Image (cartoon, rainbow, N blue to C red; front, side, top):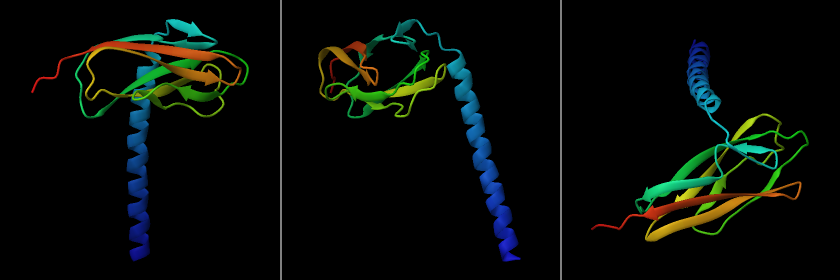
Length: 146
């Protein structure tokens, strides 16, 4: 009796977890469909390669920005390295061979604590075909009020 109850509970838990993930994946898919890719660089389509973050409030926390791209080439390619200078960096990106016409995401981690004035940051990817893609991020740090 105890084993049968455990099996039923395990099945219900697995079903609930899977169902929740499907809803989340479905919502993400809907959001990705609505992306307008304006900039194309070396068979990669991006919504933009230049980003104005506007006014930035310096905080003690890492701020994350998720960006999307589509690989529109036909040859196998890999992002071999994400490059930047501290304290802002590309913290997540696909590390597998990219599939043509698939949409991927990458995440930039910004650390704005104790920053002042204008921000201009260039970072990007090195590709397995020898090319390099650059992104530019700008903004203005708001004065810290205490």
